[in-house]
Image 1 (cartoon, rainbow, N blue to C red):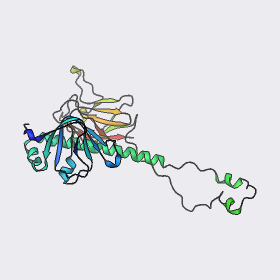
Image 2 (cartoon, rainbow, N blue to C red):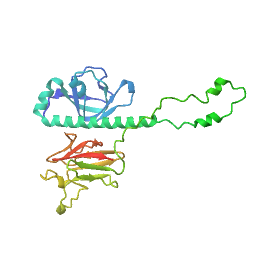
Image 3 (cartoon, rainbow, N blue to C red):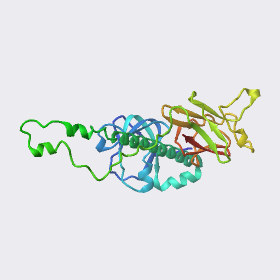
Image 4 (cartoon, rainbow, N blue to C red):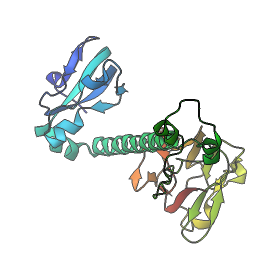
Length: 284
């Protein structure tokens, strides 16, 4: 894709690409270098850092809204500028750019969902009430000499008429070990071995020595699967799906095709599609 020289922007470390609150009609694709996004309310701690192949500034450009953060160069960058006025024409001429942008946006959205779910779970756990001392213990405690009636009354508050239940914790993103599976609509269940952290998804080929941990060939009558179609990867309490090599029929998370070599987070209830085989990721 050839671009005019003025379509590129080169900036040194420490330089601002744009500031929080600026009007935004341009997005940027990073050809080299690193850019940090910062919020004034968060101080010097970046809310995101992007490198070669990443893009930023698209939200303000598409929504025609002011910049919600500042973009500061951490390592000298070379940026490709894409103006709002020429964005539609660029996508019409280079469909692959639009697909790459959609995949990256879907990945960022899922990462935000996972972080939010983890934060809600942590907050709910912190709000759990501690065990209160038995009421009889307070009743049996002898009053100190000179203690007034008002002071004594504070030892045993009147019973409450309202029972307050502790908040229920949000469900975890995924189990660390055991209980995880891929479920097909026709009833087939493909359990994930709790002893493994990585699972090849595909169809077996004894001659080539390929024996995937998740063999979906029984629910793939059209043979849409590649032998080494994709991988499910367990990292701590999170799961990711990765397409190691470009497949003919693609790999999808919630109907969005993922990019090759990109770890896309998945959570219970997400729909995964490998070629024409659609399954639900579940964690009991």
